[in-house]
Structures are given as structure tokens and as C-alpha cells.
Image (cartoon, rainbow over the protein chains, first blue to last red):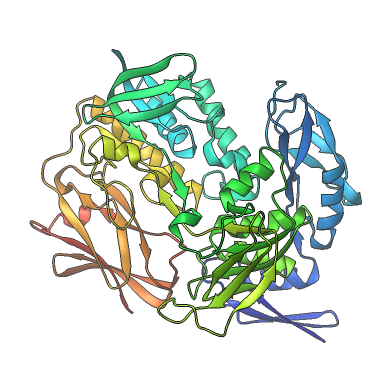
Length: 121
Length: 419
């Protein structure tokens, strides 16, 4: 049995949650609404996050283009995805929404540009 | 002298939303003046997500949120000047700007919208003892260096202040391989949004020390370490609680200050609490035809509210040009019981819109309290609030309807009270 102390982030209330994992059974205490219970359960079973960063752009008006994971990825994959992003160099021009890395770190999620970078000095 | 109906000072989220709304309200001759080399303002360096939940019902990154408005401005063919800094605004709405191509130029505006945003409180305003080595940055400066220019600012980091930018930078630097050792916060609560504390600190095991401050910066050429101490209820360091952290970088996230040098030159009266202009329900300052919105008016935590507020300033500026003037008679809005300020600070009841949104902040964390609205001594409305915190802006809607049978109201009061 595992007990985790979390802070709910579904609203400004920030309820302190106590989540107990006992085999397949997850119980959430301390929440004051159903959204808190759902948040607590997801956080201990399969937490996910959007990762945002930048990649090096060559020949662009700006040295970097900002990027993000097109969907949430499993939380434990954050650093794997980051190390792929950090190795990536692209050439200008970049258009917002362009796929920069396909299937980053085997997550099935693409990395896309969140900013356009024109060719420039 | 060149003339424009509306001149907007600043091409960030406030300026862009104001421009779009003014155009939609019928203003044809608008000029945006932006000092940076692109539109979008500080959103361009805020590459994290979480923007736009209210406005677009989806989570965007800062550059994406900015782009939605930049696109609108481009489609509407609203003229703008980049790399152009305004150095003076006169009470007669004459604007002196400077850029490389034109030199110094004065233009006249029918209406001015102040949308200059805010600045970070720098080290000099904090009074931290120690040398002045390299390696001390405000969090926003570090954010720009990393996200726009691509420089890593340090490897071992201590952050003073738990404002949102500091929290965001704690995660950003961690993702780029730096070690963020601790975030120290002078107050007994964080000034940042809860989701940022969870997703930027808790996710990466970065400790947050409340009621702590930096009491020494070590290092002569470059930062070599930081001493932090616990503070008492008067925010004085407690001797014997010093802890040393070896690090090469100190980030400061100690509050944002509306940037109102230009407002002052125009003779605009400022609110001592917000640091921004005193405005009426049309977001018009004490100088006729000069409007204000966004972080220059008061510091917001969500850009969605900036866009909404700025759109109203844009509409009102367009109405002003059509001859819609506010009356001379205002009812002041006072605060009590833990409410620090409201924006607007006064309402022209006779000419107000059907609904006016008051935005305000409280001075401490309140649980299980109410927000009460009074006209003179009479209770008009009471709203339950499970929790209110200084880091999260609150709002209260005042309707024209509510004044119907109220007679002549001399003072409106917003207060925090027991349920």
C-alpha cells in the first residue's frame, strides 16, 4: 500500500489530497469536489504533462524556436523527451504548428513549433 | 504634426487586444508603437503552456497566444511600428517617439491607450547584502536569455521569490539540466499560482522555503553561493537560522511593478497600491482621452483577463472618439477588511455600462469568507469565497440595475467579511 500527499490544482482552493494506492484500488481523501478525486487518481496512476522548450534555429531572425509536445506525455518521459529536443537543430523558416520531431522518445507524441521564425540574420 | 485617432503604447497582449477591439468598434485610424523587434510582448518568452483557457478554451503557450492576436492585427491591417520607443506623452496627447529610421518624431493622438506592461523588481530595490558579482538575474531576464536568445544562464541556481516567473524558471532551468537548489519566499505564502507550485517545484522535488529570504550573496566575480535565513513575523531575519547554498546563479522573482514613467509625463494620477493609473469604469485615466489596460494598470496573473480588460479599453477609446465622454460625477470605490485595491477605482453611475467588472486583490490568505459589496452603508451583495489568496486576482460584477433604487450613492465599498 502506498500513500501520497498531493495538492489539487483543479481550482484555486488547492485542497490537500491524501491518495492511497492499494493494489488496483485508489482512494482519494481531502478533496471537496469530484474533480479533485479524478485529479488525485490520475496523478498516482498515469500522470501526464505538456513539455515546452526551445530548439536551435539556423539562419533564422531568431536563434531559437519555441516548441511543445502536441499532446501530454507520461510524466516519467519528460527527461527523455527533453534530451531529444536538446539535440535538435533546425533550419529557418519555421512555421507555427510545424512538426519538429516525430514520435519524440517513443511516446507517440510529436514535438511541434509554437512560434514562426523567418529567414534572417 | 501627424495625427492618429488612437495610438496604443505597447504591442504586447494588452496593446494587441485593445487594437483589435477598437477596430471592431469602428476606429479606422489606429497606430501601435512597440519598442521590441516583434509584436507579442513578454508572451514571446513565456514558452510554457497554460495561456488562453478562458479566452480560447484550450491551453496555449505564450507565443501561440500572442500569435492569435498578432494574426488578427495583421488581418485588420492595423499599422504598427517596431523598434520604436515612446519617450514622452504630454497631457495634450502628443507622443514623442524615437527609432532608427525616423529619429525623434512627435505625433498627436485623439485617444491614447497605455499598454506598456510592467517591470520586475530588481536587486537594487531589494536591499540584499553582499557583493555585486555576475550571476544575479531577474527571473524574466533569465527567461528572455534562455528562451529567445538561447543562452543558459547558470548551472546551480537559488531562486528568491515564488512569483510565477520564478516558479516557471525553476522548471525551465531544471529541464535544461541545471540544479535548482531552493526557492526562498519572504512571505508565509507563495505569490504564485498553485498549479505552478505543483508542476514546477513539486514535480521536480525543488524545495520551497516560506518565510525565508536571502541574507548574503557570496562571490566577487561570479556568484559562488547564497545564504538564506528564516524571517520572523515582521520579516526580519532570525539569527542562527542561516543556511548556505553553493550556487553560481541567483534568480529574483520578487514582484512586478507597472511601468508608468510615460503615464506620469502625461500627468496621469497613479494609485499608490496598484502602482498603475487611477481609472474610471471606462478604464480612462485622470487625463481625458487617455486609457489604460493590462499590467501597466495593475499586475494580472492571467493573460486572459488582460485581453478582456484591454478589449474594453479599446472599445471605450473608440466610443470616446465618437463623442462618448464620461460624466463629471464619479462614485469612489473604497476597500475594507483585507481588500487591497479595486480596478476601476471609481464609477460614473449615471453613464455606466449594464455590467462593470471590478477586479481586486486581497492582502492575505482567507478561507471560508465572503466578499461583500456596500452602497454607502447598505449591503447590496455578498458572495461566498472558499479561498482567496494574494496571488490570485478576484472579480466582482456591479450592475447598473443595482443602482436603480439606491438613490444617490456616495461611496461603494468592497470588503472581505465572515459568512
